[in-house]
Length: 67
Figure (cartoon, rainbow, N blue to C red):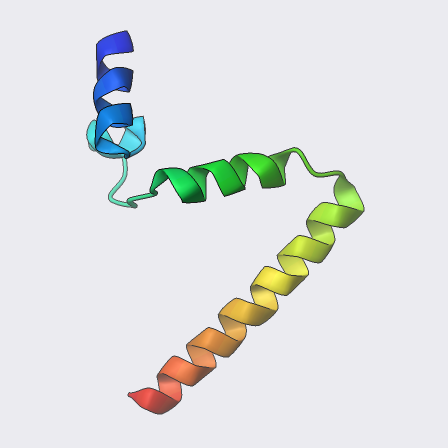
C-alpha cells in the first residue's frame, strides 16, 4: 500500500484515482483545501459552503449564456 501511495504522491493524484476507484482527478491543491475545510467548525464551514455554492451557481449561469 505504501508503494501505491508513493506513486500517487509522485504523480500528484489521489490514490483512488490511481487505482481506478474514481475518474475525478483532484490535484494536491484541491485535496489540501478539502482537508482544510474538514477542519472548520460548523458555522465557518456553512459560510464557506454558501460562498462556494453562490460562485458555482454564477459560473454555471455564465457558462449557459456562453454556449
